[in-house]
Length: 131
Image (cartoon, rainbow, N blue to C red; front, side, top):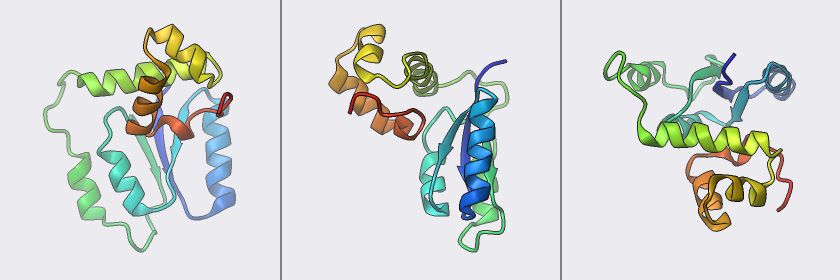
């Protein structure tokens, strides 16, 4: 089964951590965000596959969330950014979060990898082994 990037937003710390542990144990890639505004920013980053959100959050705008989640074109191919995000996430997962090894594996400079990790919000996906 393909790993999915799953956005996790829940104020209840124990419930959020339980969800993250269960997702990781199932081979998924949870992206944890602290609040609804950060979740909205994360939705702008291509490559998220699923959402796990506490819909009772007071600052969550369900109508805005629906608009963000509307597919622009059914069956449209992934954007290059979405494919790149998934590829980098898989490489980081493969190396156990070692950014030097990941950069070498991908054939890019470590500084380029760090820039892309920040750009795609992947720094929460893996253990920071070499930083």
